[in-house]
Length: 226
Image 1 (cartoon, rainbow, N blue to C red):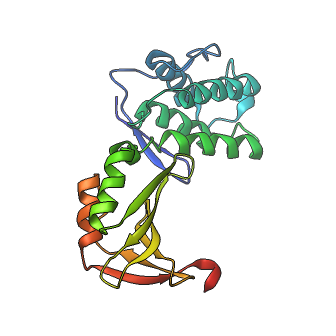
Image 2 (cartoon, rainbow, N blue to C red):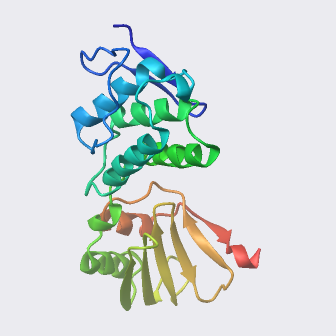
């Protein structure tokens, strides 16, 4: 069969799921769970009717279908490492949100599930920065006397407070902050501003040490200060 293009207003997904044939009156698997055959079964049940008014679709119970989609989307959230987009699940939710069957509130929830399914977890870069090695990188990179590492897993940032460091402007106390956005040096002598690295984000403590010794830095201002 020809691929079926599904447009939800936010996404366009082309369905070509294996050799599945969408029959006109496939029953809705309301007991479906998050497994390949169940997801494909839901797509196959919805596809022939996706632009048909709800009251004209055989066997359609909108409330039950919504709860089924909610259960399956919830099971996706519980996948320990969801790192690759599940195209079949993405197609299912894109098709569901393109139907005229659901209320505005339900559509909003389905769109949120679709966004989650289309956004797999990014690799955890923080695991590449063991505390001891990160401490050593700052000690050597800034020739600091001491350093203390704090790992904020919730905020996804690593803060290293140091004493007696020097990035080329004299010895001082301060901190290095590493996030998935940038690397910053906060010099206690200059409250309200910081240095931002313009090199590529480091992927290891060795890279961090190299960045700290690089001259490719510029000043930035803290948001609360201006």
